[in-house]
Length: 89
Image (cartoon, rainbow, N blue to C red):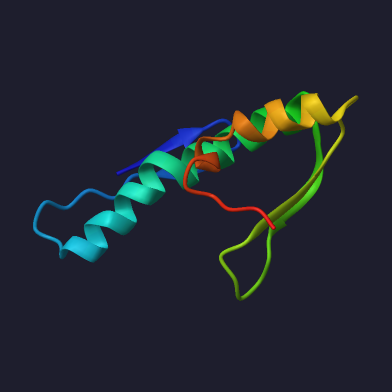
């Protein structure tokens, strides 16, 4: 199922008959990855995210933020749904 969200498309993958690994991947997409991209789009609209995107050939998303303090940067990063399972170097 697809739904139009703002300027992009959000895709939901649900299949009760899929293999456990596939189901886990769809859950990660539905509950962490896609909501994170939605949140980043909101932050772009607020002028907090200046640039960024996915790094080709990886599962890495990188972006440049404009914040007034380290605390504001921490709050921004912690507002991303992917923050829980995400690791940062």
